[in-house]
Amino acid sequence: MSSKKEELPFASSNYTMMLIGIAVILGGFLIMTFDSTEFGFGFLGLTLGPLITVLGFIIEFWAILRKPAKS
Image (cartoon, rainbow, N blue to C red; front, side, top):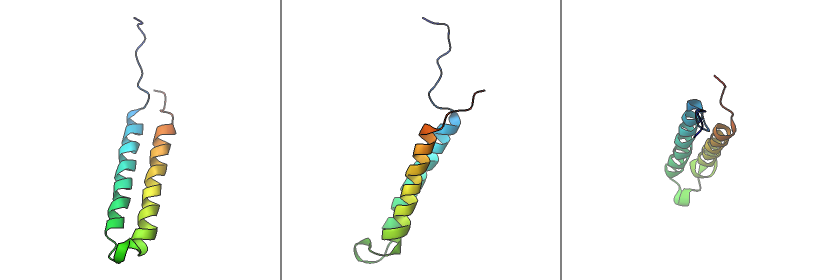
């Protein structure tokens, strides 16, 4: 057993950004369900919802790849 303190791979700010990313992804899917045109072929289903969802995935990748600040 080593006396060195085990460090977590992510800081609390990383986990916060991951939760924000998940919320944005779910919001994008929710926006896609609000499209009133048939089969979701309107602006919300084809443009806005997917853009918000991709933004959520970008936030997720950034939260995972970001190095935590040394304290």
